[in-house]
Image (cartoon, rainbow, N blue to C red; front, side, top):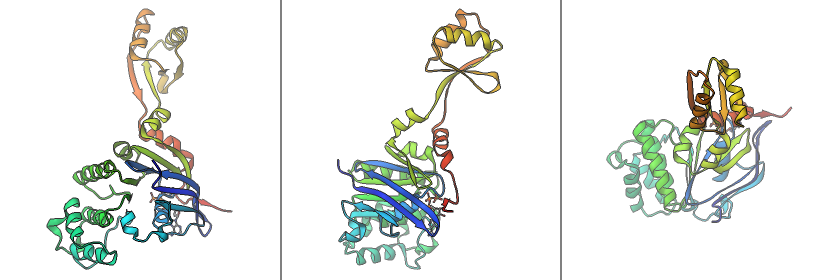
Length: 306
Ligand SMILES: Nc1ncnc2c1ncn2[C@@H]1O[C@H](COP(=O)(O)OP(=O)(O)OP(=O)(O)O)[C@@H](O)[C@H]1O
């Protein structure tokens, strides 16, 4: 399937700060693609470049094969939720969406539909600027959906939502992807992406660190082992080595048996009559894997050219 978003050698500098540094990747339809990176990694800058709000210093970004400013009716191609702070309009929720529909030649009837989708029909007459952050997020999503676009960009949509709102946005993103749309969603939380995304683009300091399915990312980056706590570490180490099992030193004098199973280690210590206080399977969390991958790239000020 061809890509709906193509980022090609994108670089964006603000003065001496390089926010995005030669970044290339593609986002495909029919799945949720998570855009992950620590604070200041360049996610928002990349998303703003996709919808033409930031001009690349070099490189280009295409949506459906064209630059955003070449799209005839951009809102019908791509819908974006970029500013989590919500709408400051003094108009009502419905009037705000009516205005957007009118200026983008979208039939007025669509406003009622999107209000229904985001669950705001009941507050359509309320002033937009008085909405809670969670409701403002929903209004932002309604605006993004207004043109029934095939491509959706959501910058940290979970921010400010309560648990029910979080479940709602996750389900909505999955549904939109299942309809064959391209859903590109940023987050600085790996745990959130693990629950929502099918595919991951990971960046740090404006550069690509990973472009893979979530499953691949987990198997490549998470470390699992059998933890052994024993007063006879030397004996245990010899027994494991004798059975061809790789063993590493863990914290507090523990041992870590790699690429093996709980059953194998259990049978081995029994056969060698080794006293053990604990044998347990351990899996490094995805969050740890992500922190590990991005550790060198965390820099809240981004790279300064000297
Ligand atoms: N308009 C701007 N002027 C100057 N510097 C900017 C501007 N926008 C972004 N930056 C800088 O570019 C870098 C990348 O910022 P960006 O907001 O794209 O990162 P991010 O990954 O979205 O981070 P966060 O998760 O904190 O939103 C940061 O160092 C930021 O300070």
